[in-house]
Length: 278
Image (tube, rainbow, N blue to C red):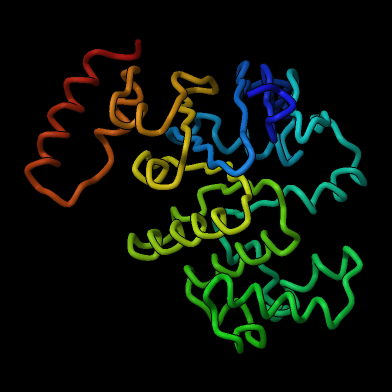
């Protein structure tokens, strides 16, 4: 696959934060990866690994100090505010906490119609699209008349997903979208995202600390540790035969229902901790 066939490329990406005391912290250090049309790329790592910073850099919310982000052949690393807003039709986001990302004073119908009307849709067309979106994320038709606080966490995340797909984007950045949900709801939301991708061809950048969740939804995986990539490749290869000790520790630390297997994992995790990073 050539560069022209890729949806997004990050080349040698660095993000450096500067505190009020003028001290600097490099959150990303020379990170490079790409996303292909219609695929899900999983970013996995512990807190502080830099995975969320990558999503924010792509969205223009983090200060890129070096490197480039190219989206559909355009360098979007340092866009103007106006150009960044116009990019919203092709680049969307689903945040970790759907409640804080949804205006509590607006009805669900108004929340979903807002990006459409901003893009010039008529009221009638916007309302028709809202009805279709509610059906697509498996919410009842009367959900549009209710406020965000009247829904569960899983239902609010479905609303956030509906808003993200309203304009038929090419890429959605999913920043820990299921980490605040119970396991059953997590599985349902993940399956919904997979179905939407199969129906629309949208690409997903899926950020998570949970390697098991990433394995469920991703085609390829990038493993991050302290702002750098330690391993990346096809999801089956990375999860079944991880090469790096850090990736092995991530896998071993994931909880499983089987008590005996969980005990074995803890023992292997203890052994890996002795080895240290390769």
